[in-house]
Image (tube, rainbow, N blue to C red; front, side):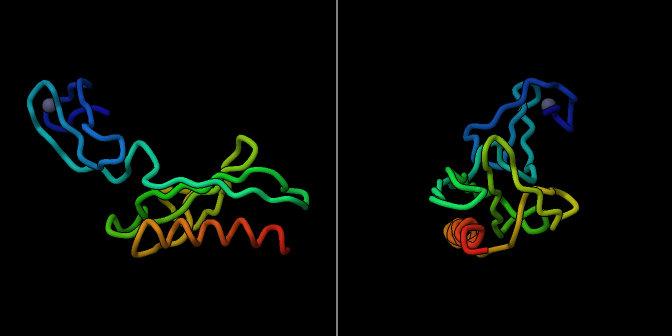
Length: 115
Ligand SMILES: [Zn+2]
């Protein structure tokens, strides 16, 4: 990611879960809209059905509200496309806490088995 102040690409985050990016060149720091790493992550295993196996649930910042959280679902090397947000096809829902987004993601996986 390039620095918006000096266009240097010597930029870094102190924490991959943080939204704050720092520039090594001019010391500028700014806030981005998404973390590099999921804030929370869990797996849920489905024992039957066409999508049986391990499902990956990850929690990220909501694309439309940085104070809320959304989940993404991964399965078999792919990521579910929800097309719920124009900013990010792979995120779903908007929750008050990362834990609530994770729980909703797990419920979504469980509903695959029931359908
Ligand atoms: Zn800079």
